[in-house]
Length: 68
Image (cartoon, rainbow, N blue to C red; front, side, top):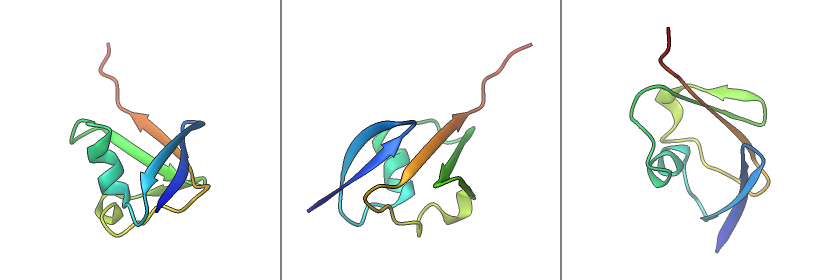
């Protein structure tokens, strides 16, 4: 069974009962500097493990960029 979520407006299919932490790992993102919002609500990193993703979730990923 799977769910379809939208990450930065791109459809992604995941196994059912995937957490935000699992999505972060699957995307092979750096441990620091990532912020996710689900359906326009920012999810604190401390809640990624227990935040389960559902079909139709609109997820935005923001990454810190070093500059000067």
